Length: 222
Image (cartoon, rainbow, N blue to C red; front, side, top):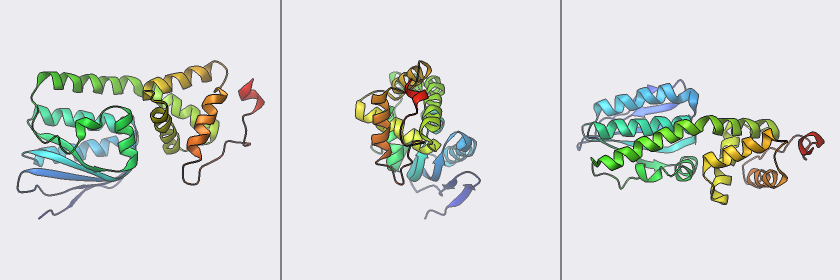
């Protein structure tokens, strides 16, 4: 029987369930995984891993938002689990998490079918490379989010959603897209083609906000 134990609800609803008979511990995460939530997330992940004798399963079906900081924490926890001979998988995930992991190419690392322990050195090296890449590209992605927030009056969550969706629809890696956006913004404003892409994504979001004034200002298009 899984008796849930509250771990930390200051930032997220994090619940660590009692180990199952086969030694797996399930961690349920509800809320938003951004940089402010990382300390609470890391504590919960360490506790879950310490209680597990076989592996950790994540229930992210109630996770409404996840950015690069949250992804870095998950990648680091998975690497630590593998080094200790444990599995680290995602049991279920909501659309926001799926989009992020798909866009960054990390979804296969967490798929529920990946139950067998993988001690292959090449796989561990690949994990380290992906973690480093995510850490290196986070600053430019955060800059791109800031530009979208300021230009289109978006929340941090909507700005992230816009980046991820454009990345998917244009088949462009997330950090490459962010770099292009930052570069063009520094060189005279966001191009009209990219503005139209942003507006197309905003039109699909619930209660999509409209840009200030509805149209780019003359200053933006100058």
